Image (tube, rainbow over all chains, first blue to last red; front, side, top):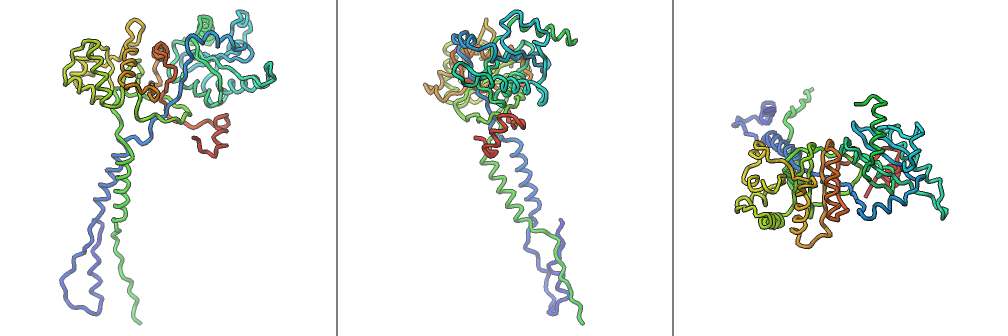
Length: 196
Length: 220
């Protein structure tokens, strides 16, 4: 192929001429073999799995305990996050157990999963705010994030928000069924923003 | 003065070394990797920063595609054999040896239990054609997912501590379906689940990122 036979051509210029039959080169052209080798490598690289898939632990609360645990959460340390359709995220501070809470127009807010100015900033803001509060023993409070997914949310949203908990090292969070009140708020916000 | 004659160099490159390297790499890839397991449906998993590895064995894997169809798979042929024999006896499916073998050596199944005989007698292409890949029913009226979990557990032969329950769902799977599955696990008193995700790096400036940096970029 690319090989030029120069092994015996040098003989012309040499002093000890002597007509001899051309020596055949003993070299084997390895190029096709290399081709084959790399072809097989490519095949194996593409058809096999090298890295095992990663998993995320999800520990669900026991049903019986849930009610009790939920009540322990203080209004001041809680952040409720709602997952809506089209990757929308809604959030409000506290648990919204007070029906008058929604009277404040700024209460129910919408955001996104964006890296900047999204839900992460809100989680961090709330976490830092809450860590300034002190409980009865004088220890810093922990923020508690309540996650509620609407029926229009997707699995990706769910994993994303759990991931945010891991990213921001939020120790206490829970996934809770969405309430009718939350659904109404989502609807209202959607209509207000012209989302169909 | 005689001219100094430069000996002509051959343009041929010795490929032997390169060949050695190629086959060395080939051997490495053949030994270090395993074939991608058959998947009934393509599932694009979401990404997370978690680095926990999915174990090789003792896994009950539930694959959920974007339409919410649920598929069940389990490792270990002896275990699969026990599982299908139990199901056969319990639901009086009347599976013959060939169908049992089809399950034992197969990958995932996703069909209502009553269709199982028909399902196992067909090849994968035929299943697709006949629309038998319906997924395991998870609704509350006919929750066969619970049965699969139970029989899957029974097939482990008492080794429950190591057993992991994995859910591999698509990005676009609607949440209510996920919730149904989670509720099924809850009803079986299984609280610890593993969600299969892709790895992504922690975003800069966050708590997880700082921890990673503090650990010298090495995590776990």
